[in-house]
Amino acid sequence: MDVIAFTLTLSLHCSLIHSGKYTHSLSLRALASITAYWLVTRPRPMRPPCDLNAQSIPVQVRGEPNWRRSALLKDDVLLEFYYDDTRTVYDMFQRGLKVAGDGPCLGFRKPGEPYQWISYTEVAEQAQVLGSGLLGKGCQSNPEQLVGIFAQNRPEWIISELACYTFSMAVVPLYDTLGEEAMVHILNMAEISLVICDKEEKAESLLGNKEKGVTPTLSCLVLFNACSDAIVERGKNCGVEILELTQLMGSFVIQQEDVSISYLPLAHMFERMIQVVSMLCHGARVGFYQGDISLLMDDIKTLKPTFFPVVPRLLNRIYDKILGSMTSPLRRAVLHYAVRRKQAELSSGVVRNNSLWDRLVFNRIQANLGGNLRFILTASAPISPTVLSFLRATLGCMIFEGYGQTECTAGCTFSMPGDWSAGHVGAPLPCAMVKLIDIPDMNYYAKNGEGEICIRGHSVFRGYLKDEEKTTEALDSYGWLHSGDVGQWLPNGTLRIIDRKKHIFKLSQGEYIAPEKIENFYMRCVPVLQVFVHGDSLQSHLIGIVVPDPEVFIDWVKERGIVGSYEELCQNPKEVLEDMTAVGKEAGLKSFEQVKDLHLHPEMFSVSNGLLTPTLKTRRVDILRVFQEQITNMYSTTAI
Image 1 (cartoon, rainbow, N blue to C red):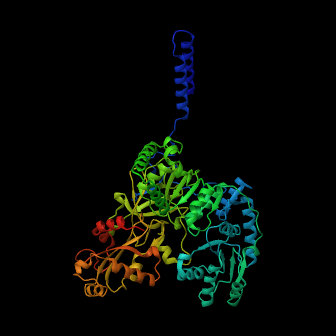
Image 2: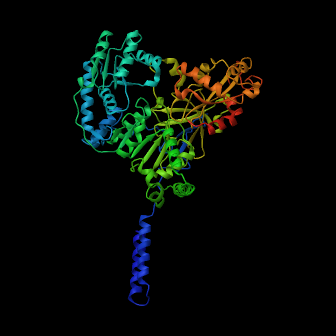
Image 3: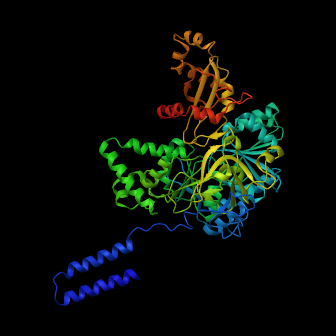
């Protein structure tokens, strides 16, 4: 109304001027029109759903000063169900079915072809038919029935999952990097009799375990693709029935259109929650990549997604590619100036992709991601604040960061809409309570707003299958899940991840690393006396600190044509790194588990220099502190 009144006043004034005495009425009319247009179309900041300076609220509990809850809640009662009619994953899809009906749901494509779509109605029908087929193969309609899915992302994965949920069965995701020992353990622990696979090669690996007699409960394999007579006969010989998916369900009608991308492993809770909770529950569409990560960008350009779930490793690659494409000093200067201008808008809460800088500088970058992105969610590992702020400016869309783990159904904190600062993982979700507890050994105390992150709420799991010991370690008697991560409350109520309590960490691509296991393998190397393996959640690779064995090191390198004193030889880690890489490969370490650079240190870790405990265990925090300069240098100079 203020804009309209202002416009009418100016127009009236212009009419009076035009009627008599002045000669500039046309200019004033133009000024009035331009001013009114600007007032109506000027960019406006997003209105946050809460006070961004108080995104989480302290919970008043006697003797517990560091409990916090989401500021989105009216009181201390946690959100249990977002919708009253969606209390299970099955309910979520049924809600999406009501919303979308015959609208497209799951999409896929073949090389060089557009996306094809399966409707919500068809997915529901396929799930019903497949679930009935599973019952016909002896599966029971109850939560105690566990069905394995061993496949890449594709529509049949989701249809198989929904088939199980339709008849109250539970899904156990399996994936290649588990390794044979872990795979066998899961199959036996869950007493899985039926596994659904995408490729014959995976079925063959499962049959190999059955033939060895290490997976006695396995009795049926269902393949998405056609299977050969040879594998059917092989399965028959070891008591495993081999079926094609079409033998349990009918074929389906394909439709075409476009919207969201699925490429992160469905075996991880993060991707499953994205698809079921965020997309299918609201009647949205999910398009799957071709299965080849090298073709992902082509899939994105073709699909034109509006929602893009990512891990920091991919955002880092996009960031590096953008900077690498600026080949001249002038182009780099223009890019950085445009980024600063967009970041200035972000600081005031404005997120848009239609500014002058978007049209002049960023439109090609945005087009490479389909041109329709509305928001991105990054999780799995922390992302560099520099990268996050840069991409928020260049991509012109909302980028949120979340934190959680499988044991709390993927997420427990989420960055707040309207808060475009970086360096934190947001405030607690309405379904979770978060607190920090003391870690005296690491000098973290809850009274200082630092400590181990603990989560309680309706999204926290009930325990590990048939493993009371591990369950007791993870869940205390009050229902708090102990994450093993170290957090810090920021003044505005958001949470920052600052450390890891357990000697397990993630690399930037989301891969878990157990450094002590790797160190034990590297200790087999002849020249290695002591070794410390380190990884950073903002980096994609490992580095190491090695103390060479002074008794053998000089002779060992001399055999390779290198001579010098012990201290001089410690300046050249190349030979040691090659030997460690060979030993690690022989031990079965994956590429991401191998160190990519080394620092050779001539002095032993000891109790006296503070790098070993009295029981001769490595003081990881102290080693990290002592060698911080060398670690920083290695990460800055190692190209992967």
